[in-house]
Length: 322
Image (cartoon, rainbow, N blue to C red; front, top):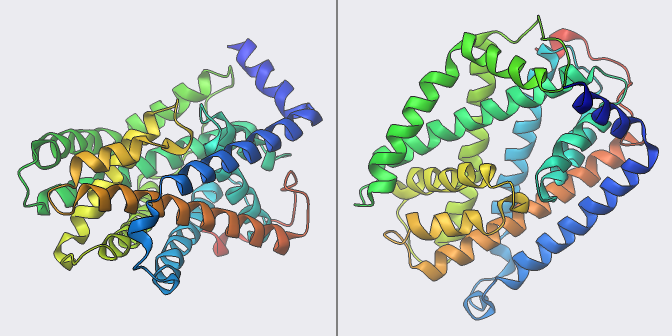
């Protein structure tokens, strides 16, 4: 365990690691964008004007801003506070790290962004965020599968059963605390004594659920570009999208879940839209998501006006975060 800890410490102190990570993220994001754009069927895009995209893009941006606000709330529970502009740059810059295969980029970038803060607390906050994201996704999947009228047993029976059991287990505060401390223990660090309350975790989970609803609405609007789709299918589309997202989260070999999400949506949504529209909608959603991430990372970088590795700015009063 001490070997893992020393390795992480060495990575954080080496100034060249930041350059290597930046180049890796830049290359991964570029490759991701090229693959996503190349998967778009130009022939099916001829009847869709550019005026169709600002609203879905705005929904994705709102979803990310909402997620950032609730990350700030969660981070504050671990006493990780900073000015919103600086914290925003750290958050959105680190999100781009998920496009590096193996998903280690996100973790390393978040640790480096919170330079000067307790790495144990940053890691614990990220683990708690990951769990809250999974819980929110499970709830959305369950809601969508209950409302689905199709006969796909994967969507209407087995997935709801699995996510229901997972949700009940992971919501238990004692199990949640043990899970986080077990993962921290892998680095050879001592366990955390302070931990967010069950109510705090529940609020953050609900906040991430709102993020999911906004993402789902963006995908739903994109799918409506290729054919009429009743609003009653919005929860189904959202549930299917987050089912694909959950599978993509565990696919460590795929940068940003590239290819995994499209494949799962291809299995889940053919009863509600033709397969070509499903695949194209997923590709367009990926492009809009990447565009939103880049816009927000650039926006907060301009606002903060400081290096992405410094989060030692003025702390926010607790009542503005909690």
